[in-house]
Length: 159
Image 1 (tube, rainbow, N blue to C red):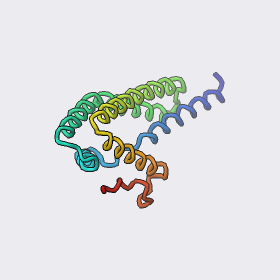
Image 2: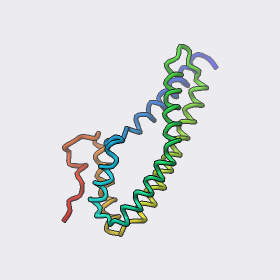
Image 3: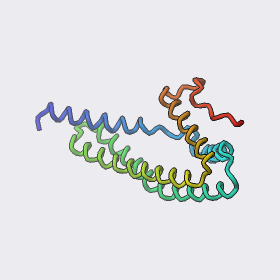
Image 4: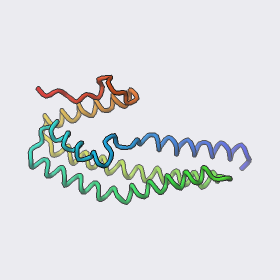
């Protein structure tokens, strides 16, 4: 592999890694705020006590399954950062580590999708409609750069 190919490969791997890191922002409520977010969601959807109990069990299951993958993902990001900041980065190794990190993120995404499907199945049709609207508002909020005050992320009004 000549120097130009090595540079291009390294650059592509670095951009992939950086893009992946940016694509997954930290949870806006942080670890301590997750309980508040759960309470907000329960109130916004008017969950019954039984639904709250079932949702908590699903969330606890998700946290248990996520813990090793989250640790693995953090380690992979750190390894990539170290490799890319090294004096003589190996494009092949960076590419392999980037692919492995992407695979871990895919597993995390699958766990979240599974949780969402199970959580949604607990809801009534009206609650599912409210949840879908909340998700649309959140997506619109992030599509506008996460700007506060643009009205896109406002929760649906209770009537």
